[in-house]
Length: 108
Image 1 (cartoon, rainbow, N blue to C red):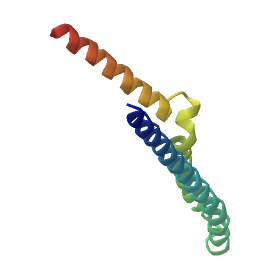
Image 2 (cartoon, rainbow, N blue to C red):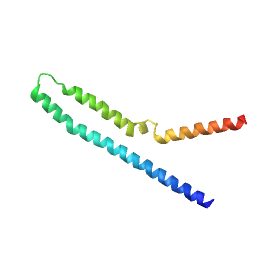
Image 3 (cartoon, one colour):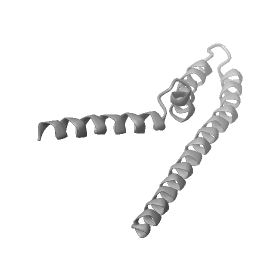
Image 4 (cartoon, rainbow, N blue to C red):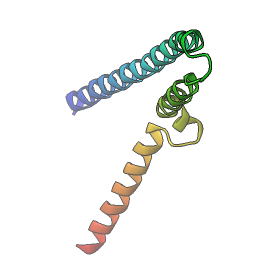
């Protein structure tokens, strides 16, 4: 019994560590994406204005890449801000599993 509790505690620690590690990787990935965007866009704008000053095609790149950065932000931070975090997902899954267990027990 005590061994099972220790094993469960170790599993929980390992699980939490892996979740935290993934979260840090996701956050780092977003900031790298944002940094590359902020570094690249001035180059695109300068090249456009130097070689084709009559047509500002850089707006397509700025807007398109901004949309990509926004959705990346939404995936990493945004869903937490509007209430749809991973914890919310896990809680909903547990809730549905409990409802299913109650239903299965009544059916027996």
